[in-house]
Image 1 (tube, rainbow, N blue to C red):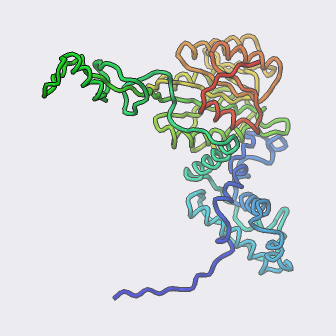
Image 2: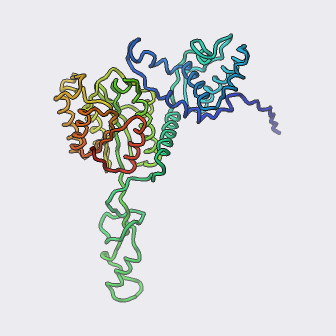
Image 3: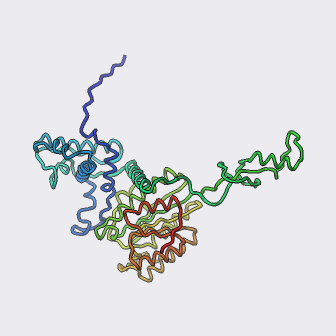
Length: 424
């Protein structure tokens, strides 16, 4: 006979924290863009790899707990006590426990876990508990963590503009599918044999003029029900990661990454026949896996819009889909171009005549290939507006002049409703 021994459950401080709510609060920290390749003293001096250490994670967790109200000032005072070693160890254990829960639940991954510090240390500032509670190790978001952030972002964005019907993409065409949405039609070779039995029998009876059984059916009597033809769509999301996306005191790249994650989650869960690929464009352009999007940073780059469009067109033309579209999120004028010999021509002032001409040529190539370009512009410079209007006219796409606060709503509503907007 097997025996089981049960021990009393001793809840830890970390067990009382809602982990999913905490992860939602940490979204901005986990998706922070930063600056890649900057020197110390540059505008990305305090950003980059250091921000993905366990020390910074625990600092962010402590701030999120306080801001979300999951740990009140009274609780923090109780944890701190009189500043003795016992109270400090309790706070360190809380942070360590939350990190371990995030790792055990599969949201984060790391090479090694942090340790509880020994000795007296302050709670805030350099050498604080949140910093000393872990060794200097790096963490990364897992696929589960990335997907969860996409789900939460999508939920926030969808909730901001009320209910919206989410299904497959409707088109004006009719086909012989399973769901009957319209009148019947005579059967033609290649149609799905979704017979309209009453209409078929009525044709046979009218042709024969009697009710003899068995009924003599002829090929011309067959009628099939029609349904709405619903198409699949291939989407390429182009994200501008030039240095202007974090300049001037505003991080525009992190909201763009959030939109990318939300759109990816929407397509995977509601439009399984669709595909989405992500391209970063800067001095050049390259495709990146969705899983690596959270770690992407902006850099000391120009804006090579033409190269991004060329790569997007190549990706879309390789997919056999009824609809193909490019969603481009940017904040700047084209300022770079890839020459035939592979060299990068740059003009930091932007709107260089040669660069603009080549970019519009690539826009025209997309239109010729049946690819729609929808542009979401995060700036309103007059010359830039004129360029975007010209690009929209050529591609017969849409242009939205928005900001980081409303970017997500504009992108999702455009994707779901497929409304046409004119640039005024």
